[in-house]
Length: 501
Image (cartoon, rainbow, N blue to C red; front, side, top):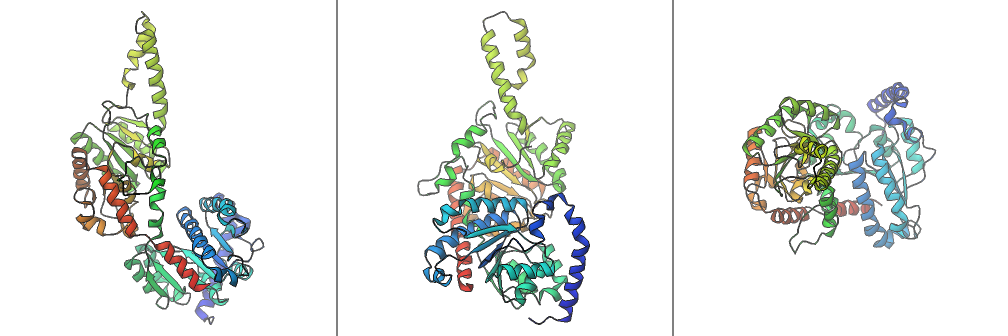
């Protein structure tokens, strides 16, 4: 690639901006971990394939891809192994965040088991800062034949160095938000000269966005790799599957889920539960109205409220209290149960005795015999949303980030748990799941999944689901069959990698 004047000027400006930013970045607490590796090439070793995934989600896809590469290339492709002196191609895995590195490190620990006697198949480190001189040193040290970028990891210095030294670059599971597409289009003059060799996008819409920016790249559509693992990611579901569905990892921990939430003590048993998931700050006013209305219209229920960000818990405490809405923190439920057990013991011990003190304690604490109907359980413990979907009495779910133009959140997870699901109108970030879920009633029938156009439509859907609950096993069965038809993306990526190495 000829170094045009415009690229030369850009890289010099880019280098200068990095030079200004580095002293600030070095003081950043979040970037302090791995700083030495981010700013050096000395620790790197030669690798045949370099796979970069920015954070936790992309790193999970990286793990999935490496495991598939092991089965598809190392075991089944002796010709490729012979090309690398009877050893499997060595792979460098990088990530930008501590979460990503942690996920990749677990794969490294398992790699000896994964690869039997084939050691040092994988190396893991932090993704280097995209400083032009540093990135050239990295490429020269690693000498990869191929760089694989998960989703959208487009760094100008990386792409420039890869072009300069003849390294092929592919983008897989590619996607572009409207905002990212707009920003890339403003600098199209740059990206036109730094084009990846291949881009595999997760939808026709994303593919067209990439074509706008990279007209010379080979661009095609692939199934989202997330479909290949989504069933196994949902291994804690409390469900009874139809006999023709064989996905044991989903139900392995069902009993753990039941036990984990057994302290949601209500009377009568099997009280319906509504889940308000991943609620974002911008839609809180709407969700306040939703809570108020679904309790008025169906008071015999519990509501599990999951703010997307834990720092909003205090807002919800104050708001629910001001609205005189009954609520309890998820973190208090275990203490709540333990106190209830102690009171029951006290009641048994004093049942036939004249113990006025004990009876007074029981009288003053009678309100905690169970979580009363109409209560909001404010979820202040991170990472339990999938478990909540799996509670056997989960009846309906609203998935947030969707009442305002925020991209939406994962609405396939509650469906896999057999929970009727409603979102707001804004679900752009999850277009990969498939528009036909919303537009084709043949997949689920009526009243199972809906993209509501307004807050009122969300309320109506939730109340209807509470009033007439669809069959949970039927929803699970149809969800799994739908997902299975969407799988295969990881194999496509493996075949693309084989083409280049």
